[in-house]
Amino acid sequence: MSDEREDTALAGDGALIRLMVNGESRTVTSGLTVRGLLESLGLAAGTIVVERNLEILDRAKYDEVVLIEGDKLELVHFVGGG
Amino acid sequence: MDQPKTKPRRADSPSESAGDTPFQIGDREFTSRLIVGTGKYQDNETMVRAIRASAAEMVTVAVRRIDLDRSNEGSILHYLDPDEFFILPNTAGCYSAEDAVRYARLGRAAGLNEWVKLEVIGDETTLLPDVHATLEAARVLVGEGFKVMAYTNDDLISALRLEDEGCVSVMPLASPIGSGLGLINPYYIREIKSRLRTPVIIDAGVGTASDACETMEQGVDGVLMNTAIAAADNPEVMARAMKMGVRAGRLAYLAGRMASREVAVPSSPRRGMLD
Image (cartoon, rainbow over all chains, first blue to last red; front, side, top):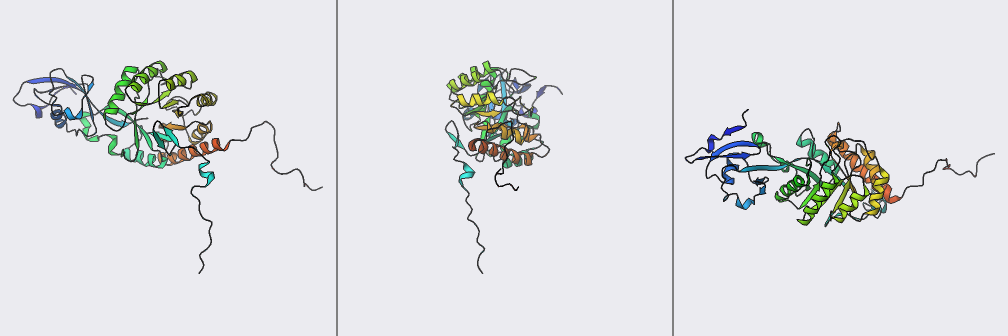
């Protein structure tokens, strides 16, 4: 499987930018917010945490933070562990 | 017809509690002295049944990337209600203070609490802790307001330093993580317990109920385990055994064991034997 993917669901009229999401390169439309990215991935914001370029994003800012070329995102949650 | 007379049941009889003090970590009180992990179960339903059977109130979880190809799998919080269990995020898998601090912050950002089970591993083969890095991370995290429960070696000096850093609990290992070797050094564990004021919880190495019991007999405040329950053929039954082992060990410690000696002493009287 290629680790580079183009999310056609996100391809709108704008220019394309490239992000790293959980270690995978993804191409999305310019202007996409964090909320928009989560929705396009089918993720509910409820129990997940978003780190952008090593900084944790406040959930209240998901609507206003616009992703830019080269952003590195980590989307994490709790899994079983000891 | 007369009701048969039965002795009234005393749920809180003195022998049940043995005058035990509440199990307090930081500003929270717990009834169960058993803390359990949520990893390695074959499925989430088995995990939840086992954890309920263990009667543990505090359960550990790990912070990991969401698998974007299987995002419908969801968080473990779909199975563990944070109103029913106290969720303790860990920093398992981290090999540096910097990484552990990063994972701890991500765990706190989930919004449940400001607690963390701090774990910084120093060696892939033994999974023994990097105590120097653990101390470094503990300093940063305590400074940021975290309640730090620190996994460490069975070494008194490290335990004292972690207490000095302000950890709410110091958690020496019984033996390496996932080994099931049981309590390797009871003497060091007793030494640590006798010198620290902060609660001492034994984390890692317990293999079966007798290990849990023996560990608690040393007088420590609690036990944290995962693999011993998750990897049992029947995790739910082992969880129950662990609950009883921890309880038995605690009661035996509070009761104060007899002195052991290498000569036999008869239990029945010598007097009154026939000619």
